Image (cartoon, rainbow, N blue to C red; front, side, top):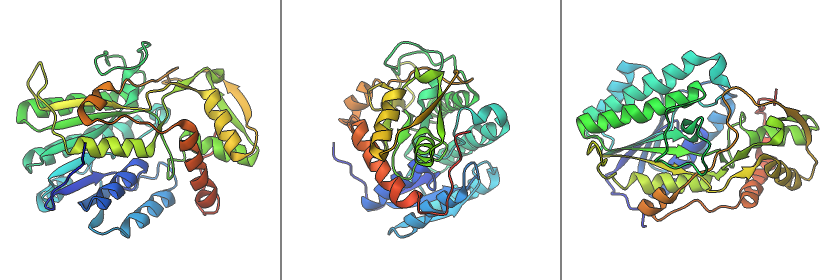
Length: 342
């Protein structure tokens, strides 16, 4: 499938100073697309990393960045009115499962209220397609692998997952009521260069190189569908140029797709591969299962492949090699500090 944009297209990427947002905005600019990014620079982790991503994007032609709190209804409404976006890729959100146990109000504000403002902005300003980030966490208590979009997602096991499920329901209602084309993308454990410091690749790499133990939850009996960032970006870009078909039940122009590596990798395999690439043995501190966590994730991506002709295909070792190259050359020499594996 050829990805093709018009010279008149203007794409909004929310969360553009975030991990996935930076990569998506960068890719769109390389397609010659006019891109506006917004980010509120929430200090969930060291804002210096977000600033560094923003600095990288600032060098790109046809890119501009606005610092904006999408939970501010008036500011978001005025922003949409003045901008004339043709497409919106909504990646801004409060991430993290465990953090939601202590800070629920942040998730309600940034994941639910802000998404409502995005929907309103798209509805009233003739946006042709809204693509938004959902999460594999919506599968919650499901145990049948691989996860398929046809499975029930009515039993989330964390507030973060519940907010992502809420986004899917909200988007469907706007598609049904106002014929706004929406597509939700359920991301599966994204990793790669410029990644988030609260996620396992960064936490583990920092601990391994520092000689500290890494906390291995559920005594290592975990599986994750690790998905390299380039595969995520390819899926997002292919989806945004393809309008969804009508929902078979409501005729609403909406769709939901999994984007994952289509491979459940044991946590022990992930740690061993990362340790080997770093050239240092990991010290393991086995811990019980954490509240809100799930034992395994594994994406069925056949629906994404059918629609876009693409399936994520970066092997774990290759993806981790590229992550380690970035980590050792940039992160360790920078003044930015990771959140420790505490």
